[in-house]
Length: 217
Image (cartoon, rainbow, N blue to C red):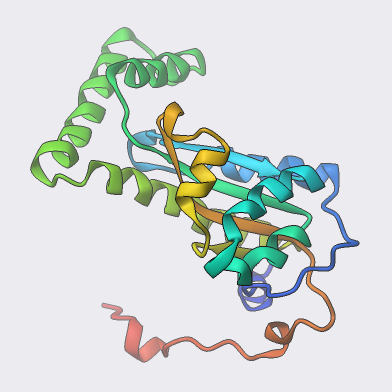
């Protein structure tokens, strides 16, 4: 794989071909990208709602009414749409659940290492809770780390994507009862395949120069 070619091929798709669907094989890889993303201290403070049916996409599209109607077709014509949701808090039960899952997966050679991880993870969490007072924002940053990983990964699979913050987050949360579950929607990402008439596919990439953005020492 030539990474530079993948980076230049991907772009924010403006028009999806509704006749083209993601295969089951590729969908499994899409889910793997979501599940295997890195996060600070392996906190994984996320949940994903994925719509691949017409009924599911119609529920997603309820959050693009009115002011956000410009994004409705990017949902209805996509093959799949992923809602990236962040936890609104994590309690000690969740922290111990993470530890137990890591232990089950063979991460700890001894109980001592497990306890050390428990203490270290809580130290970082408390820094953001009490010192920096940005705990939910810190969790949302982990979700955005996942999104960046995801956009590159699906491009490597030859799948087009459109990340969108232009939707009614409150309406989306209410549609799926997210806040009652300790979650809130952060970003939607539509997936599928570009049309031959998508104007954005033909426009050249524009990025700041290497001289401006890199300091190599």
